[in-house]
Image (cartoon, rainbow, N blue to C red):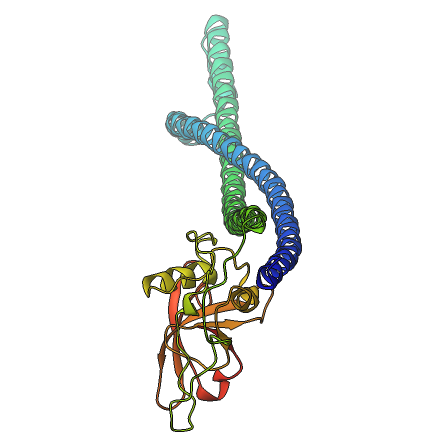
Length: 390
């Protein structure tokens, strides 16, 4: 078997194994986070249902209090009507009392005036006959009885007025106190209602936040599934490639990526283009939104495609070298910048090599998230710490 092909196959197998482990671990971690969010959502839902139940009780209490207040207002209206009726009755009683007072005073004055010359006894004894005396005795008796009845009625009416006044006053005072108590209770219930509504609203906001986090984790899980699917597809492609002989390109230069002598003793910049190597390009098979997908597209735009199944970013340099693509430590425009840092590594596209040694790269999913492309300047002092695929 061709040594170059064997190396590529071994690297592919090793890369696949290295990728499956982290992807599986990442998926397990995401599942754990999703489960945690579900638990939080369940807890928040229980809290929300409890708060809603308490709120419903408060609302019922408010409704009950409002009903009692309305009933009390009806009673107070009735009491007010009773007061008005009593006032009219009191006026009548007072008028009767006044009239009786006047009558009693007249009788008293008459008795006082007549008492200077004769008394009731003299009035009877001065009768000319027994019949007249009896008549006068009857008249005196009736007068005295009438006066006594009048005095008794006067006393009774006055007491009745005082009793009614006292009863209505007590009832009115009790109703006013009860109304004040209901109003205070209603105010407290309204306060509790606002507090319960605030609790329900806060729980709903917390639910929205947790649900948002859960949706984010679900998206990450789906991305991991897509990545795993890409790995599986890559494995099938490599298995198929293992049964296809690799034809090495014809080259008189043993090291295709070695810089040539430019005659002045200074190494020429590397030539980007892969030296005609068979990179295994059958289209972009990388997961969209990641750095490998972007660099594949960028190299394809420049006419220098990379392999479709080079694995994770941290496997590209070895896969490129195995495929006969020059790899080195000197940046060049159009080259792939590669680093093994992180779980899967990272690749970028060299857009510009500046006179001061700085380089300008473009990349995806580095600063901004999946699918986001941005440019970055690598200082001259750090340029040599990366690997470049030409």
